[in-house]
Image (tube, rainbow, N blue to C red; front, top):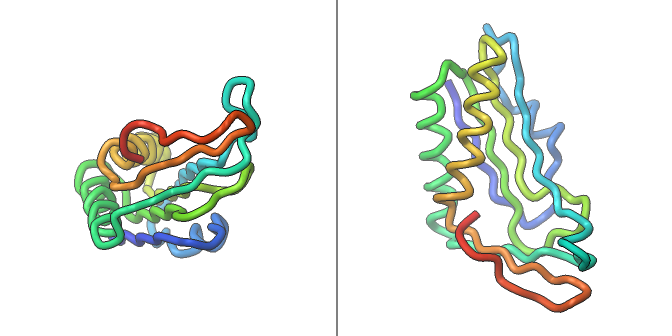
Length: 139
């Protein structure tokens, strides 16, 4: 059982992150990659800027990953999140889950993303063709 956490100021590489998973006795890898949209409503998105609580973010992500392993039939989790500037089509967040069977992997991956959005001390500013605004909430 393993949890790997990464908070990156540079581009995420989902394929490299997937290779970190421990897949022995697993029959499934479920992945979620969240990317920056190019449009928000009628506005063109120029970039997102992520601020975070540096010391606390890895602790919260580790707790989410550990709880996922405890609560679902999964063997390994990788959670990576960008900080700083993220351009359209670039990955913001990457979650990989290795599990013996696909159903618990899908459930765990979805649960991890929901928990990240509600718990992770990350704040997002959206810069569009119509101006900039901080998005409400965490994650």
